[in-house]
Image (cartoon, rainbow, N blue to C red; front, top):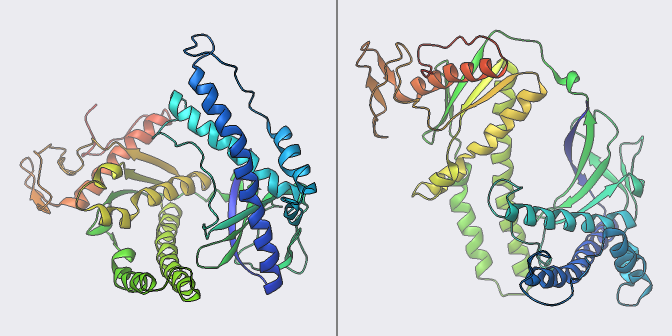
Length: 408
């Protein structure tokens, strides 16, 4: 069974290619908005009538047009009109993607209301704005894009663009997305199918428990720790300066647009650093350990406190997500320990469960065996022991709990 992976690379476009790419980018929101203008009032009208079996109002139900019908009306026929003649500047496959994306957006909204989709409620799709500075265009195999022998990428209606290859693609891509971010950089994102067996690493005789925090990003069960980089905190002064410069520029002027790009570049630098940090450490942990265990944190609840900015800057959720998917790819074990597990109250040496401790208590002595513990290191060891029990139970093997594992 193959798995789908995404590989992203930086690309360089010539001035003429940037003009062609801007035309392709501009066609996608037009098709999206035209389709939404048709489906939105019909869905609202049908909703006001209520369920067909228990109607609350009188009136006809509107048929929601399918993608083939919308494609014929909004793409094929629209290109022949003077108002939408510019749609010929983009490949047909690229313009069909917004129709599929709109279907997925409506389905996510309706499933979240009915309970089929887990998580928070999803808002209904909205109209695309012309002021959005981030643009994307997805090319599929029907568009006949190609990676040339010279290393360039051929995209229809745009041409052969230069790609900075940092690693080889494991297989032929099924689709490619051209991305222009708010700072004016261009990227291509390939979707490829990879054999999961090819990424499995040889087994090693060690595992690791991770206790996440703010003062130190993570404390590991072996006693080592990962320092918190605090990329957003360190860049706050520069970000505020760039934002002040932007606010002083006249709206609609070229100087304001230049200042906007500087703000976007400053934020992009922080975002790249914050994304690279969990990639590096998740790669290291899943490569050196046979199993990785992490605690489940209530990030949404912590984000409502006065520590909200520090919690978001830490990026715990992204780090745990990276560890999970990389462990799966490499044949490693991974388990999440429930947030109600008392990792800071249980002695990792004897298993004695002590009482609750305020956050300012960083070291404590066990009342049972009188061993002095570092709060975070002790929690990391308990997370590892509990993770072993969870992993053993999931693989139907007899568990070998450590002294700090929860009594079941």
